[in-house]
Image 1 (spheres, rainbow, N blue to C red):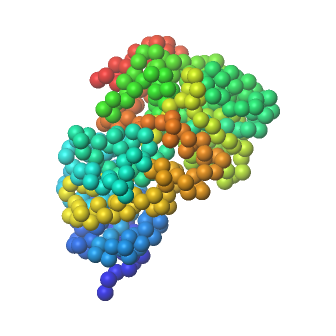
Image 2: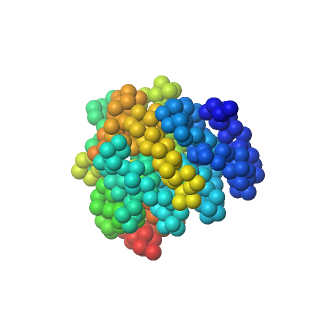
Image 3: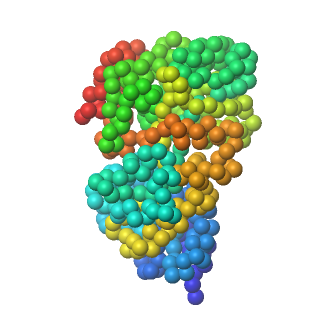
Amino acid sequence: MAMMPRTRALLGVVVAAVVLLAGTTAYSIVQGGSRGNAVTWWVPDWDYRKAVELVGEFEQQHPDVKVDLVQTTGNTVAKRTSVALDSGNAPDVITESLSRVRSYASKGQLADVSDVYGPQVPAADFAPGLIDSLTFDARTYAVPYRWATNALIYNPRLFEEAGIDTPPRTWAEFVSVAKRLTRGDVVGTAWPMQGDPNDLTLRFLDFALSDGTTIDDGMPRFTQGSAEAALKLIGGSIREGWAGRSSFELDNTGIRELFLQGRVAMYPAGVFDVDTAVEKKADVATALLPGPDGPGTAQGVGWGYIIPKAARQPDAAKKLVEFLAEPRNMADLTVTFPARTSASEDAKFTTPQRRPFAQQLAQHSLPAPNSPRWAATVPAVRDAIQEVALGRLTPAEGAAQIQKLAAR
């Protein structure tokens, strides 16, 4: 008798736990326990419940294809995927961070999924530049489904109390407004100097991209002027006091908590921070990220589906990916924003607080760097930003140092 999708899903939970405990050698157990004609899909825990429902629908529409789900986590998926791809003992579909696709593709470990794109999955329906960023040597190696970026989050009550009618639209307005908002135990803004180095460098690079830096072949190409301007904005805010030296003790979570307490008036961040503020009934509004003379450029980051070159069921895997890439299914699965523009019409993406994020993604964003060289450079770039904020390097010196790091 055929196993029902929910039964297989429960089995996937058990198997995933065994894999997590036993490490990579347990993957052969997963393969041995899976049906030979089934598509094995590694799906992260935050998508798992919805994935179970979608698999049920998929199997009804494609009775000749069965799907076995195996649950991963954000903390384990990168290592597990790397081991599976290196060994050639891989599942058929993996939900993975798009930032790692170039690394896998450069090793020849991924199947070309260019033929997934067509009338039902048009490449032009995806966020600007997204498919190009996943295409190397005329082959495309992933199908994105989840996309996100930073925008400006601010406290409208603090703005009103300071006599400020609108959020800042330019860097000059951002500085002026932040200074007016800094009083008592409130600071105009804050930066994540601690925690994951990517959090600080992402904000720095947003500013640099807004002023002349480009991304070429997955790597940022800094100009002296754009890197220096971004460093002046971040480092100067701390030295002048309108960001507060407490930034040296804060990560993303710490900044969010201070915002919820009404002690940080505005800061660039993602939609999860907005959702948390709405849930806790905090004063929150959003706007486009300020740039030198208008809206700034923000980086898009996200997740998508890859099919390993060693997949046992590549044709069936592509059928599953095509199904998951349908606008309705993409909207159901993502909790940030969908990668396809047509999927963004769902009501959950059009709340007042989310609209600026959707506009930022559609009109003022580009895919984040995805070169392994940039990932290796990020910690040193974070250190240079901190040195400028501490006054140990001038913005000009820091910009020159970052340019050398990115050129290696």
